[in-house]
Length: 247
Length: 247
DNA sequence: CGCGCTGTTGAAACTTGTCAAAGTTTGTGG
DNA sequence: CCACAAACTTTGACAAGTTTCAACAGCGCG
Image (cartoon, rainbow over all chains, first blue to last red):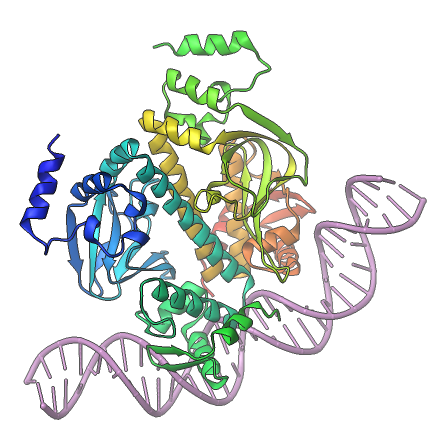
């Protein structure tokens, strides 16, 4: 098996060269539970790394599916379009998260994945990953968990869209972002939105004007300070309270 | 090919005993692509079959996860509750569909699964299925497709909740049910709803009164005939048209 | 047979969407 | 590096869709 050769080459070649084994998003991505030797084997698989500029498509609905993608750095949105022009943003993804799981079932991607800032991604050829995961139990199990987590996340969005009012949706959205930034070592209270009001609105099932107005209201009430895309959360508990209050 | 042998054995053994190999939902469930000998091995795994009465829980949010469930016959809803009493129905499941995929990621179920009519289910111990799917490639691949399909389905619901008006949501809901009944050999035009208006509303992000009113409107307009839980679709194209029209 | 759950319908209130205008930021080309 | 255009954001007034509250009807289970 020439796997070790590949690994050797990678190590020798460059500290520059990225690899799962030295990726600081390990804990958020696939390789969390892997033993060192298993990690090496995954490394050899994840050979196709690339860089996307803001606005570029990682894949489009209808594209043939053959890989899933791990975000190494950057920020993405996924969306679905229907013929009459309506858009539904199905998610925002950041470093350490996986993209493309939707493509497995039909062997075609079913949504668009678009970089909202310059991003680095790792392509993981899917059939090879299936093969490897037959040999590495922990990889198999972890992959199943990741897919399951995606399903649970989607249920959360359904709850948000199905039962919450505009204020609650936006509060939930901000708290979710805050939490994910925190998990990546950024400030929990201050961040830049990478998406437009329209994209937030599409994700939350609201019109952009409603998003804008609700931001303004949150600001008036002292929950946040907002200036265009720059958000500062002043009162986490206030936002949390907003989410729970009914009617 | 030993297909006939397997079939023979099953027939001889028991018409009583249920088994994947003679389940008429094969094409909708897991074993679709399996070779006869593989099918036998799956059969041996799926030993725990049971029966639930209407209203009984298959599992509850928080229950430890150790199996996924295939619906052999019957009808289920899955829902998520939040502390203040709000409910979000995340899906309605019928024969041949899988339940419990949400539990993989945390090893706890994250939603409730409740039988809406007397139902038969097959429990598939998850760790054993992972083991088996390391040996049977087609099972592994098919399972991944099933999980991916669930994600895609959820995106459809997000689109529905995020971009559609009440009429469109309900039309989409009826057409989806109709299509799934058709796939199971039932009438595409006439069926009984197994869920209440409130449950439909929760799924569609509407109040029960809105659901009721919209049914009435569809009836006035000649799209359907509705009498309580009995639905007859009179004009499929009319419903399809309703879905596409914007504002 | 009656009680409770489910479904229907009406009127009023409320939330969100629509349309419009103006302000702000960003990006590009001269 | 500035100027201008395009894209994005904010805000207001009004309209539309949905929810809320309430009353009543129907069905089904014990």
